[in-house]
Length: 198
Image 1 (cartoon, one colour):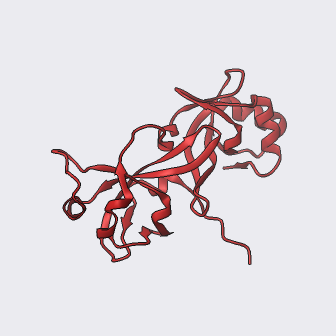
Image 2: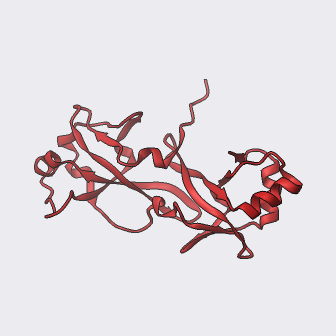
């Protein structure tokens, strides 16, 4: 029997509850760190600690809001409506690390996407995440009107407003998400699987 691939949009995880194996709430998802451009592994999950978790785990609560800490994905048993941990909430202290701001994949959302020649293509509206391998396989790009018109004219008359593009086509992430392909190559990819249009 083939394993089930659990690929979902990361927007679904915004403020998702993280629950210990004892049923106690640890906190809520705050973000997902990745290793580097080209290495699209989830290296840790940033979480906002729940009020009782601060006390239970001895984490100092800031004056305003909740403490943000990082947790490795190896602590996760399963993902459904909530993220369920392998151990009880009270045993998570040694598994939590101080939060290190940096490469949070959620920061990619709403960035403009440009091709390798600097041509505007659209904007990232979501990132796909595989909760079995803990990798980011693709991004969902809402295409600019002009790009959609170009695709419909020649290569993809049925194209929708958005396409899912493999992360291996991303060359860098800064103020923009830059691709290793041109607008025309995107058109060729849209014609073929596995690029999905919506």
